[in-house]
Length: 389
Image (cartoon, rainbow, N blue to C red; front, side, top):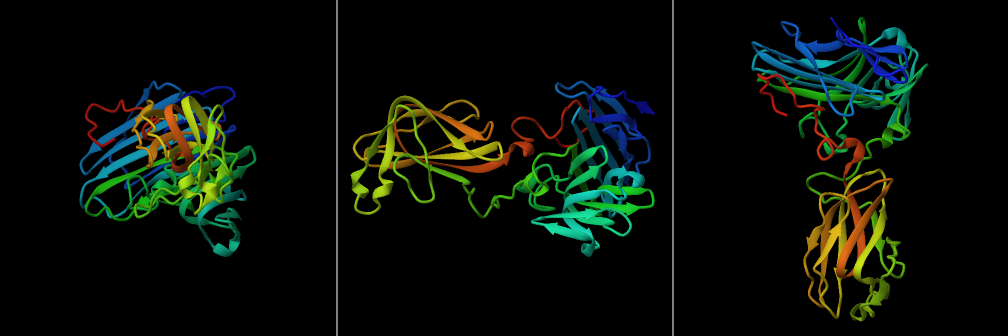
């Protein structure tokens, strides 16, 4: 057995043991075991990793005939991540599952809010796209297709995020790490687990389960649904114009810029001919929510003069050199923007005339396992570990 001391005196999440897995929330045991089925033939090798910003990071590895297993258990005071990857060779099993056990005595009688399909349905109440129910006999005893779970425990509410990549991975089989999750009341406890029933020919079963104290947002708003299917463009959630008010756009100002008009369109749509001309440096703010990475598009151009080249920066990477736009033409300068405190700061320098701007969400902060960090907290894996990242 590998025992782990409490993280910090004020921590809400403590890993009491890794093998067997035991996790406490607000001083109460909330996870009392790990599910891995079919059961491995031996015990994984377990060791601890140092990772900046994390109190504990434990890696687990097991290679045996028919399968390979990699797990990471990472925690800090207010966050637990369990990341799982298992490679199963053909004909090892037809169904595989993995997850955690929640104690029956703790969960029975608890009010839960969740995204999923409750059973029985008449024991739950629909609140917009989320459900609310009492768990246990006489209430809801199963939740299928579970994506997000909030439990209102005596020591405080806790969230389990079963789909931390959010709506960018819209369904099982569309992209990696999108298993089907369930919460089921069984004899050994409440099983919170993911399952894959299509591994007869072999394959990877992987997931990340994130546990945190309940977020301020309603359950349905932690991962806002946006239009990101590959058949449609990124849909803007905010549009700004520079000059006179325009229907569907929010007015925006730039300090030091001069409002100018393009009279070529005066007889067609007079309110759309204004823009702000700048020589030098300027910045403006695009209000967005939630925080994350957005596709920022700037409509630029002037009827009488060439504009640009100019530099533009919106919080991602280095300032970009934007191309010149010929007199009488309009162009769209596109760059990635990252928001902070629900606003994207756009900085420009050079000669330009800005007519409008818009921002379309690409990835929200809570779903970022690509830019600010990776899927695994640490990639210090076993020397024989040849599973993909």
